[in-house]
Length: 430
Ligand code: EPZ
Image 1 (cartoon, rainbow, N blue to C red):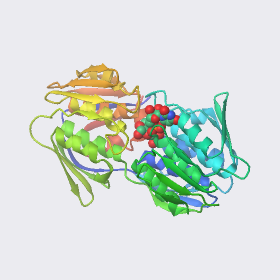
Image 2 (image 1 turned 45 degrees about the vertical axis):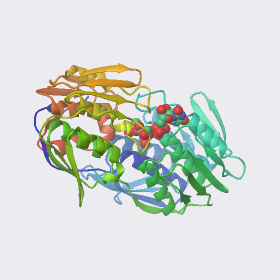
Image 3 (image 1 turned 135 degrees about the horizontal axis):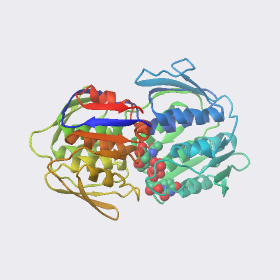
Image 4 (image 1 turned 180 degrees about the vertical axis):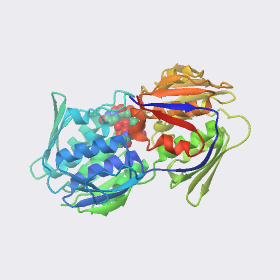
C-alpha cells in the first residue's frame, strides 16, 4: 500500500493549479443518467472517486469516453469526459460498488426519475459519522415515491405516471439530499419547492448544468429551490467549478509551512469564510487575475477559533487542515465540528507529531506548540489525511503518512503539486 513521505521545514513557493471540484464532478456525472443525450463535462479531476463513479455509471448503461477516446488519459491534470446514457440497462446499484463511496448512492434520484424505479445499496464512504439516509427517503417520498429498505438496499418506486412535484422542507441541511431531490424533481410532473436546501457552490454548479440540459430551476444557492418539471432533458456541455476544498487546503499549507504561492484557476468567492480564518492566522491573501495569492506574513501564526457550518460557513471539509495549522499557533484556539459527529480522527495522529489537542464532545481545544516533529502517521479519511501532510510540511524531520488511498480519492497529484513548490514530498510504493 502506498505511503507519502514528507520532509518538513521547506516553505512553499510557486504556482499550484487548482483542479475541478470532486464534490461537484460526482453529482454532475450522475446527472448524465437523466438524459439519453451526451453530457460533456470539462475540468473533471483525475481521482479515485471519479474513476469509481465511472464504473458505477457504466453498470447502469452510461458510455464514458474521455476526450473523445474510450480509454482514460493518465497524464492530463483535469479532463473533458463525455457521458452518454442512451438507455438505462440496470436500475440496481449493488453493494460492492456503492459501499466504497457515499455519493454513488445519489444515482437513486435520476434512476427513479427516468425509469420509475431503483434498487440501491445503502451507502459507504468516509467513516466520519453515522451518515443516515432519512432525508433522501423523506424527500423522494414527498415526490410520491414509495421507499422501503430490504436486505441493506433501498427499493424506490415512483407512482404510475412518474414522480409528482411537491413542497418539501428538509429538517436539516444536506448537500447530497438536495442534489438528489433537485435531480429527481427535474423530470417530475409539476412544481417542486425544496425548503432548507443546501446552498453549497456544488449545488449551484449542478443546477447550472441541469438548466443547460433544459431543466427549469430557480433559487439554487439560496435556501429555497424551485423546480418546474419537464418531460425530457437534453445533453449539454458544462465546466466543473474549481475545487474550493483543494484551494483552502493549499492555502492552509502555505500558512503553516510559510512561503508565497499562487493558486491558479480558483475563485475566492467559493470559500470566503475559510479565507478569512486563514488571513486572521497571519497569511496575506490577494485575488489575482488567475486565482489567489497566499503569502505567509513574518511572525507567529495567530490562534483563530472556527465552527464548521453549512455554506457559507466554515466548511467541515477544511476542519482537519485548519486544525493542523492551529497546532503551530502562538496560543490556544478552538474548533467546533457541527456537521459530522465523528470527524476528529486526525487528532490522535496529529498528537504523534507533538500537537496538543484535547477533545470534549464536538469541540477541540488546540494549544499551539513552538514546533512539531515528524513521525509515522496513519490517514483515516480523505481530509484527515491531507491535514497530516500539512502538519508534516510544518514539522521538523520526516513524516510518513500511510493509507494514502484516502488522499487519492480527493487530491489530484498532491505530491507533484507540492514538490513543484519546493516541498519534499514523495510517494513510496511498496
Ligand atoms: C457532502 O456529503 C460532501 N460529499 C462531503 O464531503 C461534505 O463533508 C458534506 O457534504 C458536508 O458539506 C460530497 O459532496 C460527495 P450531507 P454529504 O448530507 O452530502 C446528515 C469530502 O471529504 N444527514 O450534507 O454526504 C449527515 O449525517 C466529503 O469530500 C442526515 O442526517 O453530506 C451529516 O451530519 C466528506 N440524513 C449532515 O446531515 C441524511 O439523510 C450533512 O451531511 C443525510 C445527511
